[in-house]
Image 1 (cartoon, rainbow, N blue to C red):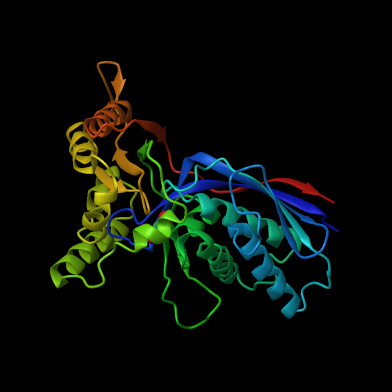
Image 2 (spheres, rainbow, N blue to C red):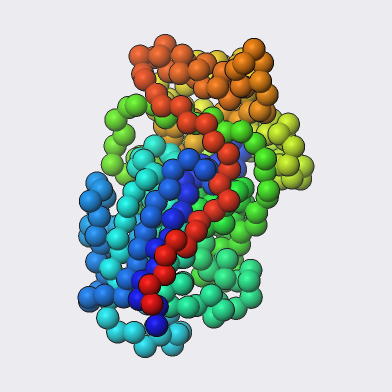
Length: 329
Ligand code: HSE
């Protein structure tokens, strides 16, 4: 019998311009580590980080409960006791880097491995759809509503596309992946973010959109996918006429940071998920001893400085996805 499983899952960026709630990209920058153990009664959370310890308000707690309830309902386990979830946060919370999703994804994979349900979900594709569904439930804790873009990226790595409107089955969220090769420059402004920031920044999104803006986003999103994302120039399609204009007001110095990044050679520049982090995409090249990502990072820092805000710059590549780091039998 497996007693406990530890999983490490990457952070992610969502939306990527035109793909609101649909596109996600796993980032090789920060990781959460979650250990699920058959122990005690009910669901308990153990963590020394600043996260809710009430399992009903904790991302991973919500995921573990939903999965365990489902395993019992399906008759996949006779296990009657509880689950302890130990969470070590590596992903900064509230900065638009899929912090809650990393914990949710790690927990979902841990639960699957703990109860050996890999083969029970059905076909390989079906398993993926189920995992995205259950991990997405955890987003309710921070976003107030479920969204699947970040969890799918943390679950499968690299670039993902999810369909949150799949009507054929209530418990499945279709996901597909694209293999992208790109340099990523993350700008994390050092500003105070509210608790439940995603909920707040979903509140500023317009309730209605102009046809021309919808068409602009659709054209860019479909071109990006059709071109496969393999060639860095494809990233020029990551442009957004709908969400960015509304959310950029929450990011000090946004226009200047974007202008600086593009002038320094970025291929595209987007708000990372619900913000306030921003992301520039770049081709790697070296000129006068300075690499393009470094040059773009320095330009972004200057942009934030013009709004009197300091920021951290992190240069990374897409992440290959999560890893089971330990199994105790
Ligand atoms: N798609 C979500 C949003 C991602 O933009 O609200 C949150 O990280």
